[in-house]
Image (cartoon, rainbow over all chains, first blue to last red; front, side, top):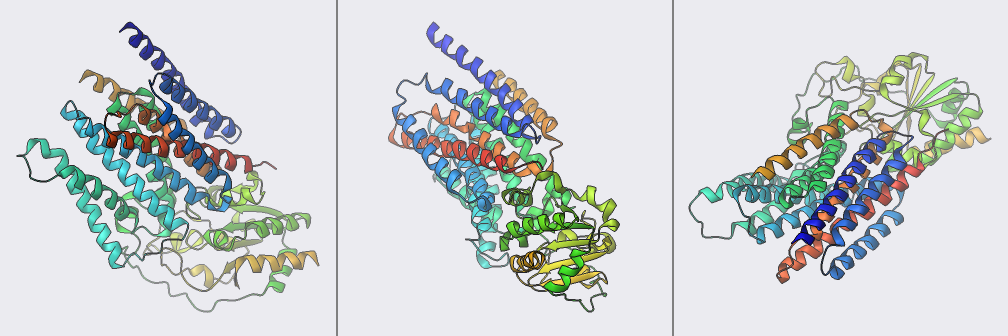
Length: 459
Length: 90
């Protein structure tokens, strides 16, 4: 007996050390200079926590095999994947974490909970873990463009209904011990409806809202782990899970603020039912421009601001964009990048793409930094971004996106908009920027257009 | 029940600590923070390792939980590291 007590004592001390390392690690991860170290620290914390757990297991061979297999699969995916596929990879790994907590809670249910509080924890952990799992898989499908289901399609409607049904069934399951015995295996139904409900949770959410959903699912996986920690009476699970839950929550709020929408509106309403305000009447003629003329204007510009959006990711144009930026700098032009927090499909998507193309992060500026100096910018080059530069957000109180913080490119001396066609952005709102006097539209594939500018500079 | 009150206290404090620690994060680090936090949520591995294995079903559940949590841990940390290595100052 005393040996057992010693074991738990040693384990608990190591868990406390690991918790402290996780806390420092995630703190360091939030600052540019210490981020790499922070990640190492948290990985080390994970290592000692797992080690402290596994050395006290009587027959760990099978479990070690599971870890090894997971290590091989996880490392292969992480090292082989192209940097441009990072958003969907993060979603996928997040889903696996959710699945693990779902399985933990399932196993605890089979071991028969001792008291009602444990039973309650099992139900809630199953639900959050399960929704995180299938929800993340759907997010993975959407981000990798393997899954294309319209918000209005009947499949989406069916799954959305199942999602609401799954919430009701969760409540039913939680209250079950207080009700007369029922004649069916409710637990199997709960497992299945939870997994289907996760699909219905994410399926109706549009591509432009993905940054919010991804952050939220990230937060869920942490909360599920923390609940699993309560269930297993394990403090390191509680601390680490809570930290993840908090960081996911912060990102969710940042993303929602950057869209000036409530989380409720993003998840359950969407842009479609936002009030259709007075459609702008200033739509008139757009002024197209060709590559040769655009080059002449850029060549004589002394400051250029590049605003990338999801279109740059689709066209894989980040490398030619970096090349253009360098050529402009050689030409004596000051080049900056204006990055909107929700540009792209996940938090920080543009930053990752530009980093992959070797753009240093200190030339990337946030909207608050560039907006005050916008009138001194000679040319603002908008590459496949739409709603994040839509002046309706500041000028038209009736617009669905009114109030959303934008990059105010319309205040620059000249604006180039690189775009495939005149279609509207994810919000489905017409963009008056395209019709402004100082705007020139450069139609075509972003990669080809920028490539054309690059070769003009080289000639 | 007292143990739950105590652990619930740890839970609330940790969430509060997390919110305080990460409230101001530069947008450059949004993705790495998310991905790094995601790797930390693989701590479920510690829970998966102590699950009961007293039936075939329970053993299978425990094995799968260990497997998927490990993928989360290894994949998450490596992808985060790879991403952070790309971020360079001028």
